[in-house]
Length: 245
Image 1 (cartoon, one colour):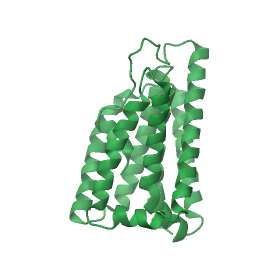
Image 2: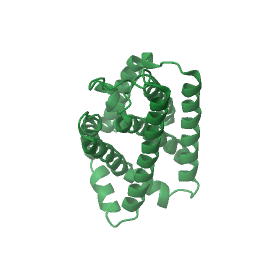
Image 3: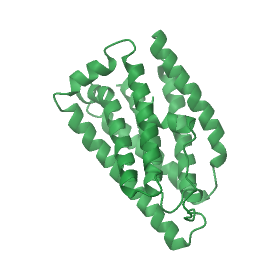
């Protein structure tokens, strides 16, 4: 479902140009400062996502947006295509070497695109599900993310070898999603569980990249990559929690 899946398919990763040292090669103070900036920006991206999502689902635009996005047989497929294209642009801007404003524009565009595509499911979760659904899904997502992040930071291993497998699995997932939309079948809970596992793999992969491959001036791009992994995980965990409501 997510922009995050297309990041892998077009080879999203660190940009090694610009003559700035990678985090792994930087002195300790620079490396720690880079990590702080990355996770502060990640926190800001999550806060912005929550604020925009809340504003959208509580606005008079929510129901017309949902009708436009899912009202026709192929509407969601068009939304997905636009979402992927927007994600590519956001990623490109966020990795801009010479323009910090462009980097922030990319991060903002990525967050806004997620907030928009989440509107239908968040609307249902907010107004037609148990009040505990959203907090439960958010808590599970943040707990899993924290455990995975802690594992990578403590182990200090380079998990860049996961990239090929993640790209292949993402391509298969996108094909399954497109087939489900085109032929009108549900992918079921098993697919959601598998996608939570895939998003967990991305959390490990991107956290490892933060440690070993991103340059110390790429905190905005690193934050966007991590945000995409968290958003993907939240989407499928929320689907699982809603299915049990």
